[in-house]
Length: 326
Image 1 (cartoon, rainbow, N blue to C red):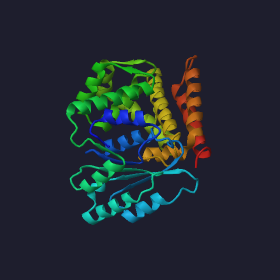
Image 2 (image 1 turned 180 degrees about the vertical axis):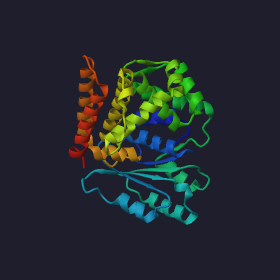
Image 3 (image 1 turned 120 degrees about the horizontal axis):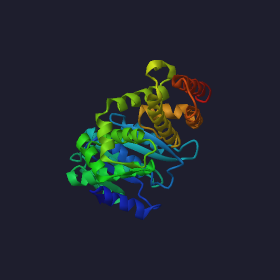
Image 4 (image 1 turned 30 degrees about the horizontal axis):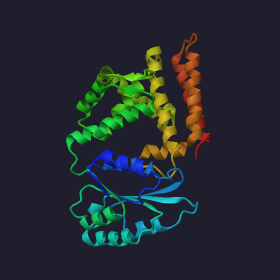
């Protein structure tokens, strides 16, 4: 099967579930977008919550990849393999890939990734016969806008928010339709709006132009993801109620993001922050969110020192880092 449109692929995944193909080839120019597409496909696999994810890329030797892929998991889990940038291999290596594809077992999921397809015609033909090819190498601007529009709406809904069309249009202007930038702006605006349920154009303009928002975003990342949250210097004279509640929103978002990453299968990570989230364990994020809620409640009473509450929170999460991880 061959799909040259994101929504056609979505329809296939929804219509054929749980009887989906085991073999996929994703052709997209941007590395980040290919990985995101593979992640989206994996979510539909029947074994998505009980698998071992293997991730390989050029120039890993072909034999090593398929040996690992065909070796049963010691925990009895299904192997799912992402093998990216196959178009960078030379002709003989591509023949080797094709040889293994013809002998692949149907109970193992394999997702191949490539930037372009001109050297992959025989592999493309084989995958089209036995699995699914997603070829977005010639995606139109309109199709890409629709795909990113869907991504933004879905991202907002996951955080129990609605985003207006003029806000999405503003994101497109600011990010030039680059998915990694779109995702980053969405994360920032979700933190910025806090408990507000509807994201409008004004929110996007404020986030994209407001250095103060980026400032709080960076502080929250440093506190949650670094080994020592006290490495971030907070000066008492600047930590007023506005500072405190702005930072709380960003801290909450970082913790929720960490919890979401950690709840995936432990082998399923792609970025350094994912590895750190797995190391910190689910209990770290849950307990830290409770402590954040506590200091938020305390702050609603007569408080003389907001920095003392932040120091209390940092002391708590430092304890959790040291004794709830590893």
